[in-house]
Length: 372
Image 1 (tube, rainbow, N blue to C red):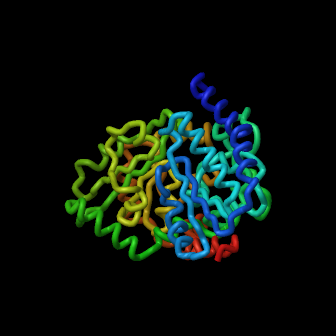
Image 2 (cartoon, rainbow, N blue to C red; image 1 turned 120 degrees about the horizontal axis):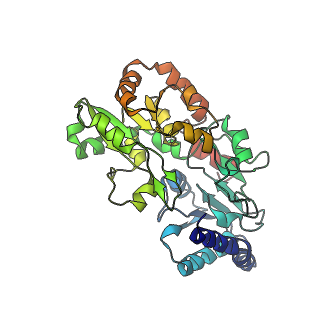
Image 3 (cartoon, rainbow, N blue to C red; image 1 turned 60 degrees about the vertical axis):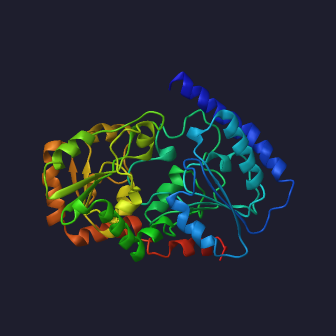
């Protein structure tokens, strides 16, 4: 780890273990406010897609008062971040419910009141690459405390995810529940699917009548210095074949650090209902996409090194797809998946990884925590 990042991590620890608990104790001098619901995120300046359905649903509850605390920590100075965090902790101490959908250290910074419920609407489904405490790099060894502490409910997409998430996030029994994930309700909406298709073809009328190939890889390295692997190969494979219309959607970390990169400006979740084929590597976007039971290809030139350095919960070669390492095989793999993959194999894959995502996950989550 570089000196700059080490200093940054040490400052995080100082905030996490001293300043934030002090702010929480100050806020806790007041009673918990019944009906106060906080939506918080450290990676977006507005409500992220993973919480939009839940946000819209709770707005219908008259007894609830919603506060939104969403910002991108990467864009903030230390002083502005400190002020924002103090504001959040004061609110956290009085909230009845707090919803998050990604790593969010402030909720784990101190012991919270039992009358405040923290709900982790995890932003992806299924089981793929290792994460959390199952990897040597996600949580630094010198970091004290559980970065996933204080969760009352962690929602996952299927029963197969429960024991894995309990281990990787060090959760006690009963916290991780296979309720389905809230974001999947949007993706399964017939109106949403129709609007996504209409708006895509308005923007790209030349795509009509062609097979739409969506390339959506994850990033390599760290969020501070993200990289790509195989991007040029995908372009070369499809750019001169008029049967296909290639759309690239790069990971937000990569887009933010490389603003000149060629990436579609339509959000990834709006491209999934439109695509005929997904090409990805180790991105969890695969599980959102599998809700549509459509074919996909895993393209990873660095597959072997990724296995050694990161590892998987489920080996990709067991998925109903072709795993491609060599760019020369990419076009043939795409054709095989589009025209020869059995539908029932994709249906079984969806059932295993996203089996509780049936369009009613949001209400199921709210009933689980007693909000409706």
